Image (tube, rainbow, N blue to C red; front, side):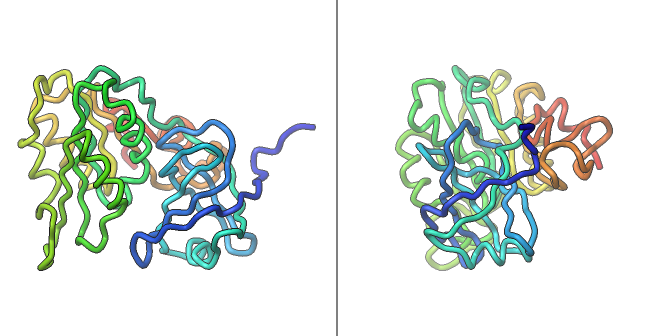
Length: 264
């Protein structure tokens, strides 16, 4: 029988972790190959479907960090452990950790942009000897909106972590300011050969990449992730097509040398 690529499968919710009032991580039952930066199409009959990045990978599961922002995600938040969601995927190319081995690596992420790179950080946290060094700069609007706080506390044992927020509160225990302010302060041995991953809101990505290039990073050593406009996930609907590139098939992870030309 020919497999219909649109046919979803049922996946049980194994765990739900609340980060903020509108951002939860759902651990979904899944057995198969999946990479950080790939995404699943998550659906509930009568409510619709939404592409969600993989934020965590483990034996027998994949984690999806979801923001409650619309009809589909509102309904997903009504589901809890033991309930099931329909999934399709994983789709997209994802990040290849082999691209960064042996290098100084800088990861810059904003808001939910931490989700698709969390698997990369987690991998190198467990294999830190495969990098020369790892710096993570993560920005959020307020301290109350920081995601993965427990992970950041764990990761700082093996890497340099800069957590920053736009707006300070009285009990702020992290930096204040935009992620771009900390790029010139990164202590690297050779920025011309260092690698970088940048994921987040478009403006944050644009200014962060400009900052990296100004510091000596090479365009061919910078990876980005485009995550907008994806719909079917398999290059059929054309919603994510920019010129001759299908973001859902050819991306969403791109080298900056390619991604900088994807203007829609």
